[in-house]
Length: 92
Length: 158
Image 1: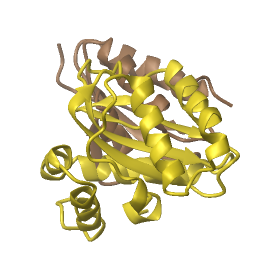
Image 2: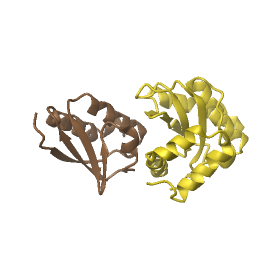
Image 3: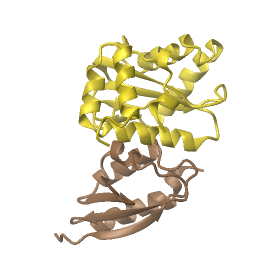
Image 4: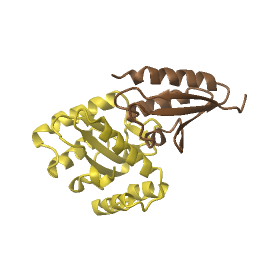
């Protein structure tokens, strides 16, 4: 297990932005992996498993988020998260 | 966005009687009807829409907090209310905990920005443990209102 963080930038493409259901999908997905994922927006950094913290970023359509993952399954977690963002959380 | 921008003063409830999800939602929508923010004729339609949204996944977002919500054409601006249940309501939350603190939101269709900013405000303020704890312990609507006003005036950390 490596401590080096892998990072990826994702675009919020869905019209509604990161609302409650989208945040819940992110948190549920992160929990499936042996990884710690932090979500960074500007100066704010939150835990990828905490819906309340994710919502506090107030991320709307067209904004970018940086995903930083550590742990055994960090790359897989980021792949899955990226798919979720590209798929617009099943919306639009 | 501040709590004062979307929380209807007259609709705040400190002692929810309901013990289940549907009952809690009905009580909160009824409080918005009674405070004149929602048309009585739209009551059932709004309750149904909120319950339908819950079927997509619980809005119980953890730490004893839920944000039941819907879009509805009968409102022309974001309306919301706050309710506290001292006994807790089974809301099928993500973390399995019962819910003590509710923020119910009804948005006009096609105004996702306002909804998002309300969620941002709620979640940002609730990150402060003191604010969250005081709200859950509030015994009257006046106490809740005072806590919301204090949060709006940045008297809690975040």
